Image (cartoon, rainbow over all chains, first blue to last red; front, top):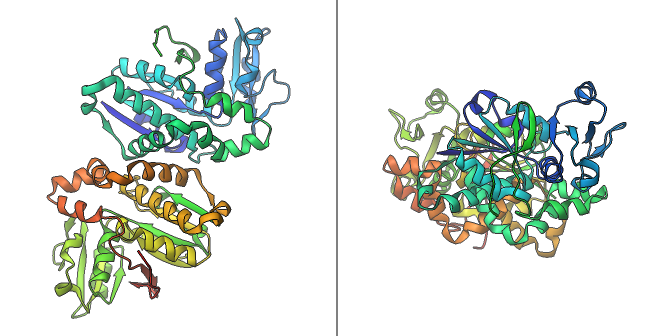
Length: 245
Length: 245
């Protein structure tokens, strides 16, 4: 089984994702927020690229969420902070979401066999689900404006670390690219200090300055949730597979 | 002081290297070989992109070295194995060298203020020299055919680790990009097992298959040499600065 980690959306060629399981990562904050919304009872999430597309899809009762330059979009119900997506706001609702990097990465992966949205919050469960699909895996770090983001790389390392543990002796059959290997090493070095690493990276500093430091603390909680968001018919929904964390 | 690590030659924009110190890394094997040749008394090395350029520059008494697809170029005196560049072969000689990735990276950096060729063999000395120049630093991992190579990333991490140690309290003024941070974490994780990491990466496996496993053992020797190759008037020569390792 091949496991390929790509450092940013720019590096992904849509044709190379055909017949693969693609795991999209945007730890700060899109995939953490998507997971949180689904875990709190959101029925489904439409990931869209533009504000216009979001408004065109809108129907009464839907929730509009997302960000531009880390901030809530004018006229939208919610921003991109996972802490906004509480059960009382989102349970039973359909969400339309547009973010600068994460939802774009999901769109880019649309030729994949399966698309999974991963974050540090559900890395172990995502690793389990991806392995069970028995396809080659591409881990797509969303990055920020086509620049690699550390927190996404660390999550890629977490996923590989979990896959190696799950596969045990079978992991000898894994073929990993050099970028994936380096993210595994980086994750293993900082795994007991993930929060500190997130506070030091570019997005961590940017979000702290903008007053979102609690989001970073929340998103750094490794394996706090066992739900796996997957794309079915263009919408992100909770996978029906049960995972053990 | 900004320290930016770029994952491959493709990611470097020549204009962004103006007025910077650029450190080019191609651990397996161009920068390790360049260093070894200079350490064994080679007078100067012309790094050129094509075989034709190498032949046009040739003068009687010069040595032609380099590789294509890891192998010696027909009609050349030497390949790209550092172990070929012994004192009896290279002392006092001028070398013309062309390799697939490393010499191309050096050419790409031609607008830089200073170009340094680094490898695991002289990481500490290169870190010392680069810091002493007091310019922003770009560390350019050569990679292989525009794909990131683990061994170059680990050497970038080694350089940053040394710079942080050398700067001590002053390192708080360093601004590092996220890719550089992740390479620092990866290096720190594998620093006591560099050889094993090199044997597992793509180039390590490729060179082992081609019979060059001794080159990998040689190139993995961290800080074995204190010489720093720098580019002066288009040629790689030994820096006149003395370093302590």
